[in-house]
Length: 355
Ligand SMILES: [Zn+2]
Image (cartoon, rainbow, N blue to C red):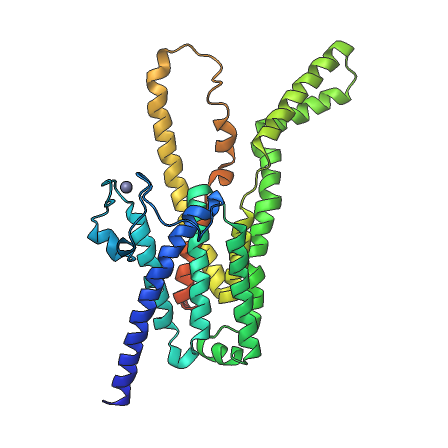
């Protein structure tokens, strides 16, 4: 066999092994996504059917394949098993294999691809958590940060950083800039600009509060003063119930800081751009659908007496601050996953268009 044949065979064996390992880890990620938001132990309990509670036999726990063998049904009660478990296993396996195809171990060694895989695994967990619960586990975010910092330090200590830079074009400086390139703007937009816009432009409660405060500061008759004060207390209560309105979660900020440190600024800016475009399209679709649903709902009620719609009242502040109800993480996740493979290529292509 020629050396190139041996290399091809060796690579194939590595890819098959990585695919299998990815599927097994993907099955563990399913457990994380399901149990972490509920504060359940990751190791104590065996996997069980969500419908009948029967423990799943070890031979039915083969990642990806078992779902097909069982035709997506529980062996015990026949309840449908969501294809999502299988798809997350498949996704993890494919993404891991993709990393090892892109970052050839002959050129990079195993360290960077392995760190990249662990990083992607953490991204998968927080994004699906965000999709399910609109929040991300702090522990997984910390792990993600640890992978990114650990990878950077390892590259420095083993003097691999120059080597990785020569092959990927991502320098240490690119990574340090990358850590702040998206996370700081997200922090400003999410925790400064959005709350200010909400308080001064969108929120009717805050408008009313300012009006009432203005009236209080002018000379009022004692009777009027108590009335205004009680109105103010009511508005304050509503504002308190609504809670603070942020544009992005802290999870999004940490996610993009870790991704920037791992991938460099070009890739992380590309990732954010992809995430914002996809999230924006999704937001528009959801909003136009929501309006349609409301129109359909509104028509038959025409004959109903026009009264204070007390039921729909809590929905209003949510609509006026859609970002607090909107899981942005999955879109950033799609951007990050794309950027791991082709982030720098997209960036360079875009700027070559500009000349
Ligand atoms: Zn069952």
